[in-house]
Structure formats: structure tokens, C-alpha cells
Length: 117
Image 1 (cartoon, rainbow, N blue to C red):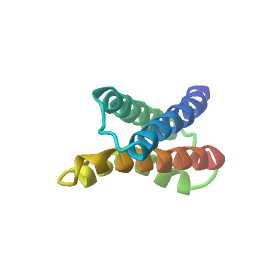
Image 2: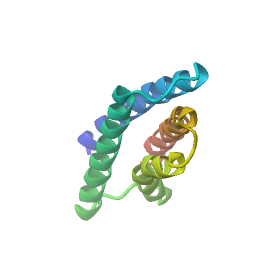
Image 3: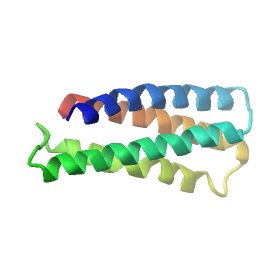
Image 4: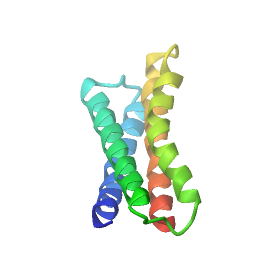
């Protein structure tokens, strides 16, 4: 359980940084750079690990206090791939905005998940 809590705190900080970076890129009308794509890939990896750890806890008979916590877990692994799909076919200048908003949304989801866990 401590691992899940520690990962959650790391996720919030990491996603907040990713959100700020993406929104700054969008505000400056810059394209998404490969380093930012790497940050997003790492974020997806961390979110997936967090979800797997959560599933292990559930199988181990530990349940979150509130059932909506499961929705936050599902959202956490689906939002970035959804943002990637939403960005496809759009102007490249919009990609940073889409990813920045997705990371900001996920920051809020992670904070809310910590409150309900």
C-alpha cells in the first residue's frame, strides 16, 4: 500500500510538470519536441504501473474507501492514449495544447484518486 501511495504522489508531481511543459509549448506556439513525447511516454508507463499495483492490492483484499477510485484508475490509463488519438489528424501546433490539457486533467484525476483511496 505504501508503494501505491508513494507512486501516487510521484504521479501528481510528474503530471503537473508535464502539463506545465505542454501548456507552455502551446502558449509559445511551439511544436511538440521529442523530449516532451518521451515525458508523456514515461507518464503513461508510470500510470500503468500505478494501475497494476492498485489491481494487486485489490486482489490482496485491499479495497479503496470509495468505489469511484476504480474509475480514476481506468481514466488514468486511457486519457493519454485518447489524447494521442485526438491529436492525430489535427494541426501539429494543437498537439502540445491537447497533451498539456490531458496532463493537467490527469493531475486532477490523480489528486482526486489520492483523496478517495
